[in-house]
Image (cartoon, rainbow, N blue to C red; front, side, top):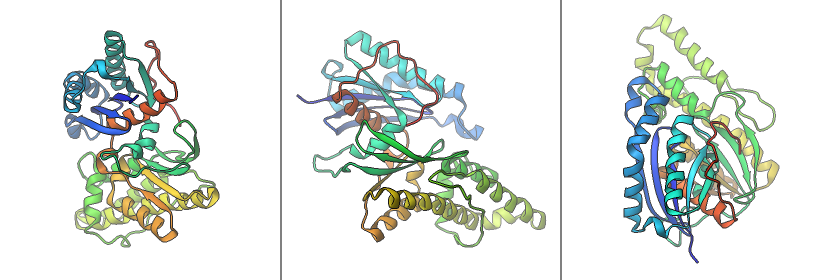
Length: 338
C-alpha cells in the first residue's frame, strides 16, 4: 500500500505545503514573505500574520496540483520545531485542525531532520538517493552542524557551532557592507566577480568538530572599520573582493571540519543541506572535495535548500512508515537539537 503524505512547513518566513507519494514529489508550493526585506531581518509578528494569510491557499494549491483529496492522505506531516514559535503555531494549528476534521493522522517533524533527509525527495522514479550511513553538512542561518546519518531514525551530531552559524555570518557581514536582506545571495553574486585572496580574515581554532563564526564576523567588521578610516569609499570600491574573501574563508572553515569528520568516520558519502547549501561556492567546494577523494556527493537542488514542505513530507513519510504518529495536543517548540 502506498504512503501519501501532506507536508506543512511554517518555521520561519516561508509558508509551504507539499505532497509526496512513496518518496516521489507530486507538488511543492512555497509562499515567500517580502515584507521583511525593509527591516533587514525577519520580524516574528509579521511572519506569523503572513502565515495566517497564506496557509489555506498554499495547502489547497498543493493538494490540487498533486491531484489528490485530503481523504486520500496517509498522514499530515508538519514542522513542530525548531523555529519562530509564532510561525510554528500557525502551521501546527492548521495541521491539527485538518487532522481533527478529516481523521487523517498527524506526524510531527524536526525541521533539521527535514533538511538532512531532503536528499530522498525524488522528482523522477529513477532519481538517485543516498545510502546509509552518510555525513550531512547542515548549514543555514541558524545551524552549522555535521551529522552522521545512520538511518532516518538514527542520527548522531558530530559537531555544531558554539556561537554563530555560517548563514548568520554571511548575512551579518553583508549587512555591514550595506547589502539588502537576505545578504547571503548578494555575497554569492558578488563573490563571482571578486578576488578571493584579496583580504585575510581570522579563522577559529576550535578543537574537535565544532564550528565558530563569531570571530570571523568580528575580523570582517574590523577590516571594514580600519580601512574606512583611510578611505570612505573603501567598501564600495572593494565589495566584490570582500564578498569573495568572506565566502572563501567560510568555505575553508566548513570544509576543514567536514574533512576531519570524513577521516574519523570513514564514511564515503557526503550530503549538504540548509539554506547555505544554495551558495555556489559551497556547492562547488564540496563537489570538488568529494571528487578528489572518491567520495559520493549529494548536492541538493536549490529548491530544496531553503525551507520547504517537501523535506517535511519526506521526513514525515519515514516517521509514519516507522509507526510514529503525533497527538493533537502536541505543542511546537522553538529550540531542539538533532
